Image (cartoon, rainbow, N blue to C red; front, side):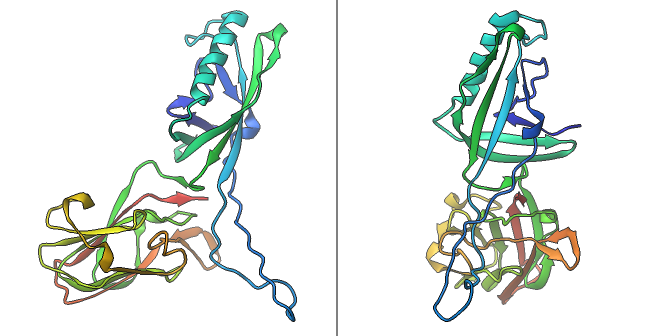
Length: 290
């Protein structure tokens, strides 16, 4: 099966042939790096700057619009105009981000996008066809899995592989951590980057510490939940270190095994004092891709 896109659930390779994607636009583009050049007198070249973020990604979706009805019948030039209007309504959403899904075989990736511009339709009157291009922007840069996965690790424990996140190629900056007590001053460290998030107090027996890394918030809850709003806010007791920690806590970053780019795993070190058999770390996240 060849690659294709769905925008807000609408196939851009229409099953009845109302419109089709140009073949050259069916591959996901790779994001560029936000460059920083830092030079000093007396030293050749530039100083290396690590941990730079990626730029927002744009992609052009070129579509050919045909005269077919949604049932597959040839409706001539008039139907082609209806198809252009329908496509224009889909691409004209401006009040929210849209979901763009990329599918090839069993591989599914999603990203939130905004349609920044659409070209003036190019008509082919003799064939009752038109061509139109939409430029989409992915503000969040990375493609993601459709659904979250949950992983449970030991507390404490070093070099633990977060197995459901294996295969990621981009950093995961919006995970939610849940530490089940007892645990005194627990911390979670991303092995690849050295970034860490730590709680300066104690998670008591029967309590769960929820840390929303993307939302920069934390709470203590006493029920089996992932919702921070139902607990006691403890955001002020969280310390975060590492690249970008002022804006996003704990970048879970895949590390490539030596000499094997197909082996990409997220590893974490987890520490805490005063633990027992009931003390665990649970991570809920979605894989991220360049």
